[in-house]
Every structure is written in C-alpha cells, then in structure tokens.
Length: 540
Ligand SMILES: Nc1ncnc2c1ncn2[C@@H]1O[C@H](COP(=O)(O)OP(=O)(O)O)[C@@H](O)[C@H]1O
Ligand SMILES: [Mg+2]
Image (cartoon, rainbow, N blue to C red; front, side, top):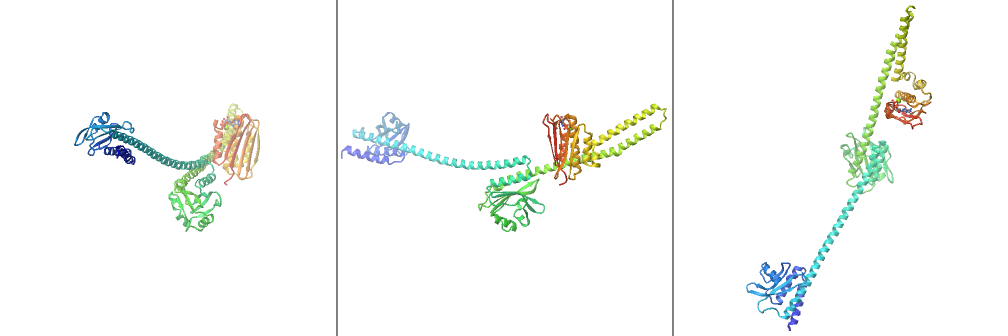
C-alpha cells in the first residue's frame, strides 16, 4: 500500500476517533493518542495557554509541564521517559487559538514529507473537532441557561400572579372593612351598620347570605340584620331558642369562631331552614362587647364546597368592627344618660333654691315690708324725718323683693310648675323687650323636663333677640307632631349668631341633647336668626 493511501486511511481513522468524542478534553486526548500511534511517537501533548490540555507517553500525572510548555513555545528536545532526549515536532492548532501539538519519537530523525502532511491533517481535524465541541458546549450551556431562566421566569410569574391574587383579595377585604369602618366612625345607626356588615361580608366571602344576630339573656338568638344575594334569605327579627343547639355553637362563648358543615341533631327550626334554603355550611364569629358575647356575625353558603380555611379569620375581622360600633353606641347612650342626669340634678337644685327663695327670703321680705308700712303709719306725724326714712327703707325692701322674684324666675320658672308651659311662655312673651308673636299648639302630655327645656330655650332666644339682634319682632312657635315637640324662635334681626362666642346657646344644646333632642341655629348675617329644637315629647 503506498504511503499516501496508508496515511489517508490513518487520517480517516483519526477523524472517526476524534470526532466521536463528546467533549473538548476527550477529543484532545484522543487526538494526542492517535497522532502518537500513527506517527510511532513515544510522547505527544497538546499545550495551550501555558497548560497541558492532554498528554500521552508519560506515567499517570507525571507529564513534564515546564518542558512541554517551553518546547511548545520555542522547539527543542523532549525527554522520552526511560530512553533519552529527542528532537520535538510541533504543529500549531487553529483551535484553541495558540494551541500547539508537540510530539517526539525515538529512532529516525524528523518526520518524512507524508508524515508531516499527515500531522498537519491531524492538527486540522483536531482543531475543527475541538472548535465544534466548544461551540456545542457553549450552545448547550446557553440552552441550559435559557431553560433555567425560562423555568425561573415561569416560577416568578406564578408567584407573581399568586401574590396578585392575594393582594387583590386583601384590597377587596380592606375596602369592605373601610366602608364599614367609615359608617362606624360617622356614628351611623346600629341597624345601618349591621346591614352594611351583612352585605359586605356576604359579598366578600362569596357566600349566599350573611347576618348579625343578637343573643338574649334567655338563651335566644335574634336576627338583627341580614343580607342575601339571589334566592331566599332569613327574615330579620327571626328568633331562635338556642336550647341544645348551644352545644354546637359553644365556641362562640369562649370568643372563638365556629364552623358548621352539617346541621344534624340541631333544632327542627335550624334543620328546616338549612334544608329549605339549601344551606351547606355556616361560619360564625362572636361579637364581643366589653368582654361579653353580645351576639354573632355569620355567613351561610349553599355551595357544597366548604368555605376556605381563612374564612373564620376574615369573619372575626368584621365581628371586631361591629363590636366597636356597638360599644360606641353604648357609650353614646351612656353619655346622653349621664348628661340627662346632670341636667336633672341641676334642675332639681334650681327648683329647691327657687322654693327656698319663695318660701323663705321672699316671705320674710314681704312681712318685713308690711311691718315697716305699719310702723310708718303708726308713727307720730311730727317725726317727719324718721317717717321718711322708714318709707324709703320700705320702698327699698319692695324693690329688693321684686329683684328676688325676678332672680327666682331665672333660676326656676315657678309659673311652669304652677300653670304649665302655655302660661309660662305667655309670661315670657309679655316680659320680652322685643315684641313676640306666640303660637302654641300642644296636643301631647309633655314630660316636665321637656317643658323646662322648652321654657329655657324660648327664654334664652328671646333674651338674645333683645340683646344681640336689634330685632323688631320675634316669632315663637311651639307645636307637637306625633311624639315630637318642635320649637322654633325666629327674629328679624342682624343674624350672625355664633354659639362658640357665648355660653347661652351651648348650654341649651347640652340640655336639649341630654333629652335626646337636637338644636340648630340658622343665622346668616343680615337675615335674622332661627333656632329650631326637636325633642321627644314623652317617655316613648
Ligand atoms: N338672635 C341673635 N342675633 C344676632 N346675634 C346673636 C343672636 N343670638 C346670639 N347671637 C350672637 O351669638 C353669640 C352667642 O350667643 P349666646 O350663646 O346666647 O351667648 P351670649 O348671649 O351669652 O353672648 C352672642 O354673643 C351674639 O354675638
Ligand atoms: Mg345669650
């Protein structure tokens, strides 16, 4: 076989061996091994970047790095282990760029022409293969990285949308809580708050109906507010004797939420309602006011799917708001009651002072004045000076008596207790410095404290009209409408009344509010002043 054919075949074998390698490193190793074999070299190595990439002909791990690197860089002789020094042959590789394949063999000097051709062919094949493997490696790494990133992105996306859902839900819950909290802060009526809570919680928890129920001291539950979407709901005012059902709802009394997923063994009313309305489960939470269970708030679903795990916690949030609303309302009514007590006590004191003045000092002054008149009459006529003095003292005494009467009237209008509201108002109108048009139309029996309040309102308003308004007339109207007493005093004066500038109107407001009524002052500058009062007339 001619040498060139032989070397072509060797090149083909070399190509097959190197190109079947999967990594750059194993290709480099195959290349030095095959090249050494084909050219009968004892040692061969690839050196690149000051390091040995692959070497054969040396004992394991004992390739002479310094010698190989120096020969790769500048030529010279290589030691063949156990034999001696022989000239080295070098060939540059295109890849890795700057890489050198070096080999040395014993025996004949140098490579023949065909051997040199074979070696440079092998170098080209090695370069190409290593380059291709490097590209493949890079590509694989890039693909792995992009797969990893895609997975990471997918994970991030999933977390993100999960978080978004949670955030949306929280925002929805916050908005619902805020709407109820606003009602609570605005001191809306309890019924409005309860109904709003029932609606918000039903919508929020995707329930079918929700409500607020109040416990009675007789172990009953009364529905005070309810809301439902489509389908039937529960009637507000419905009362449920708890009886044995209390067992299943026990948690509420320890301040914990309760979940019912069936109604077996409960009272006929509960079982019947659940069946009729198709209710599958209920979650309720206690409303605790000042440490005691006031009632509960609950949601029902007709969905066979149970409520999610966090439902209890969310119902509790609303229960706390309801509790705040209730304890606000309780303190408001306690405040009103305490103001009423203060006003009542003050009225009682005034009544007592008025009686003391009337029965004591007034009577005493009257009899003193009479005595003086008598003694004046009985004095001899020549004692002119003395008689005059006594007469002056008697006059002074009568004036003092008038003043005491006036004072007593301001402290407590005795005429009220004696003749009732109508004559008392007439007396006020008569005495007023501003002419008064009085209209009284009372059809209900009024409580005394309501009469007293009305008297003081009219008295102060007329005094203001005289003192501040420069009015030419005042209209006083006192009427009853059902169980409500309405009082209005209107003058045609300067207007611009401002309760914060004095003590009269503020005192009246306190008195009226203490009785559960309202007082408003309408006083645009230049357009007169109207004071309007509404009071619950009787006990009801
Ligand atoms: N009818 C009125 N017309 C004009 N100004 C009024 C009238 N009533 C009250 N005002 C103004 O409002 C203020 C507050 O009234 P009030 O509370 O009765 O206090 P007081 O009469 O003790 O000053 C008064 O000081 C006065 O300036
Ligand atoms: Mg005044």
